[in-house]
Every structure is written in structure tokens, then in C-alpha cells.
Length: 188
Image (cartoon, rainbow, N blue to C red; front, side):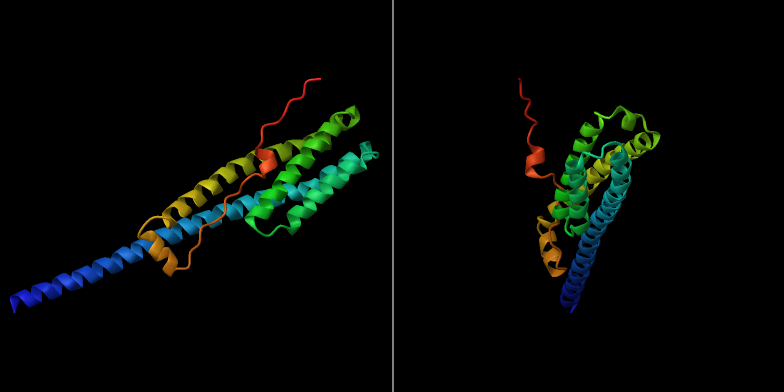
């Protein structure tokens, strides 16, 4: 009878050990998922704040550069793309459009000394620059969290627990292909 009791205890401890292991694995995976979701929420908030500044910037610039309608259309189209974007990939693409539109707007604004001297323009440009820095830092934080989550999902036996929990890999916030290429300097 002693051997059967011992085997029973070993079996019970084994089952308890598996349950504890599963719960620990589940908790770790859900923590990584939640951290990446929180990082995304923070990044999305910063992107929205930058998007909300675009109409103010365009409004200030319109008074000084009324003939630059193409530039304003570019800014408006970029903001519209951001507002319509739903997925991480769509928001990343819209982020690239906004960055390109801002670069174009700033380049054109350089031709207008009165605009560059405008206090509201300088303050808004400074605010947008600060937002850009925060966006870049938060994008790195988000992508690091997503990488950790996705790497954990790919490991055995975490992938089995993830399948049981219906957890799927998450998308990174990546720049569009055209933005990853090095800028080509033309000599002329």
C-alpha cells in the first residue's frame, strides 16, 4: 500500500505542478500582451495629439502662404488618412504621410520670413517637434513590447498555452518601405 500512496502523491504533485506551470505561463503571456496594448494606447494618443495640431498649423500658415494650396491639401490628406486608419499598419502608413506632409510644409514655410517669425508658428512647430520625439520614443517602446510578446509566443510550450488562449502575434509599428530607403542626394 505504501507504493501506491507514493505513486498517488507523485501523480497529484505532477498535476499540481502542471497547473501551476500553466497558470504562470498564462499570466506571463497576458502580462506581455497587456504591456504591448498599453504601449500602443500611449503611442496612439501621441499620434492623435500630433494629428490634432495639424489644422492649427495649417490655419496659421494659410494666412502667410495663400498660394500654397497643394501643400495644404497634402497636410489635409495625411490627417484624413490618419483619422480613417484603424490598424497598426494603417496608422504607421498614415504616420509616414503626416511626417512627409510636415516636412513639405516646413520646407515651403522657409520661403516666408514673416511666417517663420510668427510666434504662434514657432510655438506650434516646437510643440510638434516635442511630439515627434515622444512618438519616436513610444514607437521604440511599443515595438520592443511587441517583439517580446511575439518571441514568447513562438517558444515551446508557450505557443501551446497561447493557442489555448487564442493569442496571436501582434504587428509592429513599421515605417513604410519608401521611408526606410536612404535619401538619395542628387548632385547637380
